[in-house]
Length: 60
Image (cartoon, helix red, strand yellow):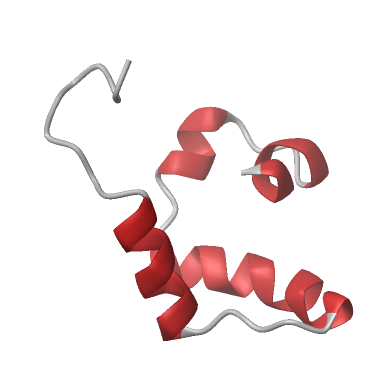
């Protein structure tokens, strides 16, 4: 989110409408520069840590 909002200055609606493939394309150059990679295993860890919710108030 920091990359999307602070670095790329995306509007929240643009950030949240991105597909996983689009997010990967944006993150990949920054991850490579940091010496890390965006992997399926990493995505699975994020999904487990931050599962989608069915409520409409986004966990608030």
